[in-house]
Length: 270
Image 1 (spheres, rainbow, N blue to C red):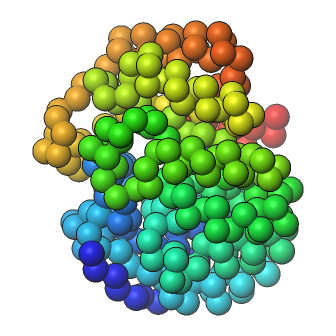
Image 2 (image 1 turned 180 degrees about the vertical axis):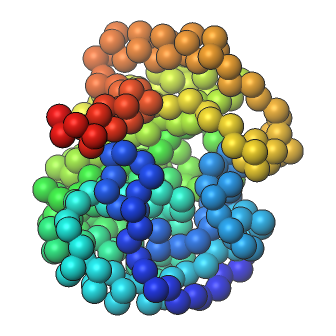
């Protein structure tokens, strides 16, 4: 594991995801090293080439962000879109914590997404700004096999406890069940356990399928096996997810459908 400190000229960037106005990535690369991650294809330099082994830390991020937050129109900020905001360097650098405070104070809404139990460290901040923060926790499966594809992320049971603690504190929390990968976490058993967690905590569950990207697909094939995520497969799995959600009574949303709705709202203001 190698950590390099860098300086940047900008902090916020326009988001390519329709649910966010801005993206904020305090780090380049991710030490969780998930083998399926689409961010592999979007990360340049050593952090992309040595995925899971090298990360760049944007040491002056907070001072840049303070200037931008004072002059940019407040909107929804995705923290983070191509890295994990609570990966190991955050314990020392505290960039995500600082960014949440700066943005919330300036009237922005911050949507956090992580695979780390470290998020509980900032519970006080989430509670203080509960009207301006939501926290998403990615859980692909609650079983030990998560280690196969997410070697250095927090154990899924630690993530489950994070969801429970956030929910108990009244923080708006959601679970991202994704990506659902053929032959890995697409069984009714895997899915039902995560849906049960969402239902018991009152968290919304957002689910999504594996979307192949060239570099991520090659890494997944090398580290696990080659998968084929075809339309027929997804139709079957989507039906299974919806049936389980309906039976248990959990609020479940297809990420793809949510993206379409968000795009319409942005385009037409509805």
